Image 1 (cartoon, each protein chain N blue to C red):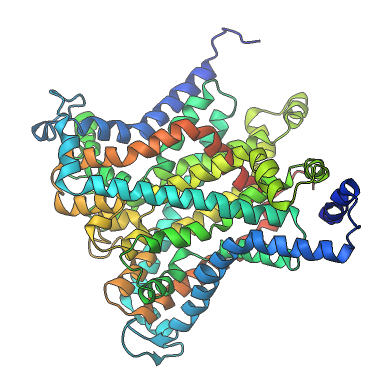
Image 2 (image 1 turned 120 degrees about the vertical axis):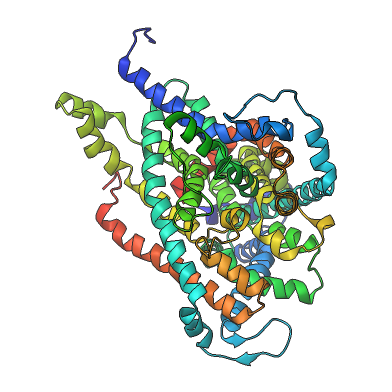
Length: 277
Length: 317
């Protein structure tokens, strides 16, 4: 099927695509290489790409210059709680919306969809006041609880998958004497594992990168998440480019690992939300 | 279809275990209970963290309030004062300018890349690279671009000088250039998502159209103009709406890279909302501008939906 015939148009296309790929990748490469440079190599003209010598201590210095390690721990534990609880709460709601008949099911579901239209900035001040009243300002709870309990997009995404499961699966379970809850945990959840992975990855990336909400709810640096710490860093060490690049690299490592492992799910998820949105 | 299933949910075990047959009503009742049980956590979230705050937002936007002291009723004063506020007007103009810069370019680029990638070998690797900026942290990316954009020793200007002998612009410190610079960064960041959506759209176009066109002797360009672009229009429609909504909410990049400057040249609506609320503590005004943002997003979306009838072609029509 594949011919080795050289096609000039295809070669031209590849050249354009490779140039494009370079533009997309260069900032990352520059960041990663600069993170290992000595500060004196930063201002060399023309720019020097390969560090000489490699200064590995930049990573350690950027972690110790500010409580970056703490920010890492904060981000990770917040993320784990939010991802796990979203997977549980979204899949529960999605299962009900797809497979159980109950009063006002459609209007309630439409309400869920409608809230996706509301930009976060509209509700941020009321949320801030709520958090102030219950004493959750400058507490991770202000970030964890709302994110864990509300993700209309997640409900919508998982519902699409649940709807694709034939009812025979459920009927078979019922014949075997299974109740609703058993059907949900033993039959349904295993069947939508790919969708759960996609949602989990989306939630992780969204939470890990999220900046606006933590910026508003958190005050003390010890409670900061990774993007906030990086921003603080920029404010304090604005001229130390190598340390900033080390900080940015460290901030991006989990994202890139998740991306490489889960890229199939990410692409599927984006595609699905786009087509059926 | 679910109804029938639910009916059997009650009867099936009864057949097996010889219990008295449950009535239709009780099944309906248990289903209602199970439904309530399963949606409860997200329902609580929806009410507490979305519906109540939304109602509160409309109330606060009609008050003079710093969030701590006494509140007085202001009616529509906050809205009026926002439109008389020079900062707010600057924010609106900047945001619209940013939208004009990012949305059309971003969409056309993403469409071209997707068409280029659609049938090419090594598609997966290209897609992996092009999508990477989309998933990365805006703060980290902004920090990296602060350096790349640096007028004196940023990579872009160094190479402009080295290769072309051009003295590059002051990307982030010239009031005329700063918004295009931020737009460049945003186009770079957003290309991946739109590209993936267009790729999915292209996969959905049946190859029989192209085969028929080839038989009729249509050129590549005619095929693109008459088949690809019209049949991609549902995707283009979706991408346009999402891009505009996203660009109305731009914040992170200008907050991190330029602090809204120089001279408020990159000061955006969300920046204004942030500034009036959490720096100046004028919650009423801030919420009023958030409500205006909401109305802007809503009207653009509705307008798009109305206009879409003219240019969006679905394959089954």
